[in-house]
Image (cartoon, rainbow, N blue to C red; front, side):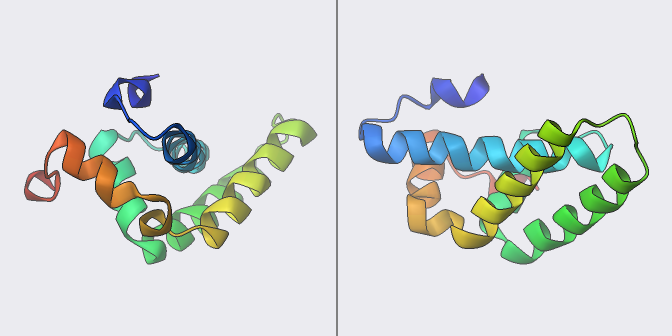
Length: 106
């Protein structure tokens, strides 16, 4: 996974950052749209974007009967985690500082 390349020092925060980013990727995946790393970072910084993308993903999932119950539960757990843990609270700002400013590329 690309997030493993961030070479984070504090293992506790590193694990939480990776989980936070993985939850964002899961939400974006279920929107059915193509996305890139910059899209992930925009979501990490903007709770409103998270809320919008979760709503889009839920609508897409409602129309797809092929998605298993377990995947739906995983999605809901990711959404719940993202709503409970704003990115800055788990050090997402530190992650960006380690890799460089991405806001200029958006």
